[in-house]
Length: 216
Ligand code: HEC
Ligand code: HEC
Image 1 (cartoon, rainbow, N blue to C red):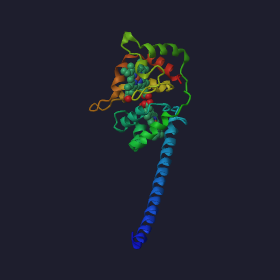
Image 2: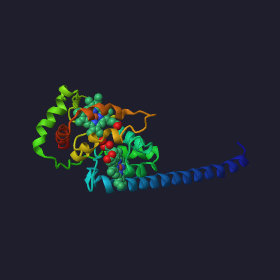
Image 3: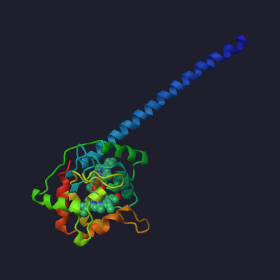
Image 4: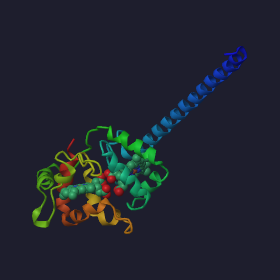
């Protein structure tokens, strides 16, 4: 190699290193900022959903997100955005979130393991357990356990019910056809729960909601 080409190559190499270091610093900076932004979103969610995602009772019950299945959370956020699921608060909250942020939030809440809030009448638990495990065959109500799992932890698109606020569950099952699957052109997985929500009586709903609300 000629001396002059070494002289030329050296500063270029140094420049290349300097540039890539600056590039890395920029990437780190961006990662830090997006981490900060995610943390801020999480704090925002918790102002309504409770400090450890355990749910919150204000004017109305706000659901527990702790331990919830990430796929279910992401599905619901998409449903709020596309107005397939009707809720005035959650449309505003969700429609500004990128899909990467939604996935990161879902992962965060899955990792929380807070104690159930409780509050349901304990005398309903025994009947609720029976419905959860056996259904009510005389009115075509299937066993909830068949889909939501023996411990009510859910799986993939099927939500966890363990520790969920009993009054939230009651409201959802009573109003299913007014809140879920609201875009007839885009039928969604919420249709699975439609017949069951119809076929349960209000007292059966209160019973099964009480049972799952105490499960850890
Ligand atoms: C202003 C209060 C408020 C804020 C802030 C809020 N939520 Fe909600 N969220 C609600 C309410 C109320 C519901 C219940 C809607 C219903 O009854 O159908 C809900 C429902 C949900 C559901 C559906 C849960 C289920 O079991 O079906 C998800 C998922 C959710 N919120 C995620 C989030 C995330 C993630 C954030 C933060 C980015 C957030 N929420 C911030 C009020 C809020
Ligand atoms: C065939 C499977 C299946 C059976 C059986 C079933 N579910 Fe579901 N359930 C689902 C799916 C799937 C969803 C999610 C729907 C969606 O994404 O909109 C769901 C959602 C729910 C929700 C909404 C949870 C939330 O956080 O908003 C409740 C409450 C619920 N089911 C209660 C029950 C009860 C109580 C029973 C038994 C009486 C039962 N389910 C039986 C599949 C099932």
